[in-house]
Image (cartoon, rainbow, N blue to C red; front, side):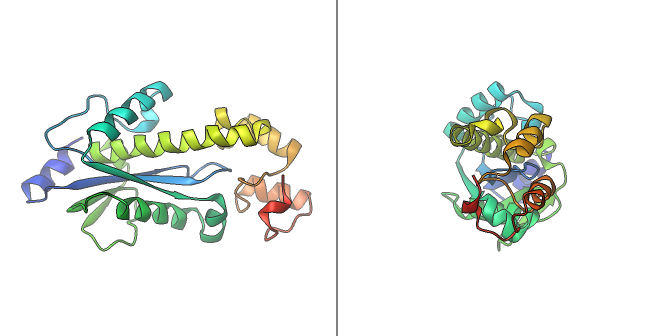
Length: 213
């Protein structure tokens, strides 16, 4: 998972940031991106694509990454902004925020996915990058853990939806509670199941979010 980083080091780059996001698929909550610059000579054993790790392992590695990396930052885009921008543009905006918030400017950026955010720096997009690049994998862990912690806090405000368990993803439990209670303030109104419920409730899509629970 250091093939891309090592090639960049050999080309003269010194500070390489990996960037990834978490939360494109959920029906509720924000999308979160992280940018992480790892030390070249300080490996963190066990870092891998966050989707391949247990929640407890991600939490452990998150602490290791933020304590040992050269620098990291996160960008968070709300569900309201997702509805305005669409999820792809919102994800790229979250990535841009994370990059611009890094404590030092990277020489090169490795992005997970097909598209690069609008940042005037040297970068490359890597499909499935969280399985190909250690820097991106580290960012995927930071983004995932950050978002999961946000959703656990939101669960306390909206306990009926089970966000502590489903993190906003369209699980059978979440869909059932959405059908029973309708959308709440953190639901993404432009996402299919939420839009369908709004129509059933005869609530205009462009109504104020505060009109809901």
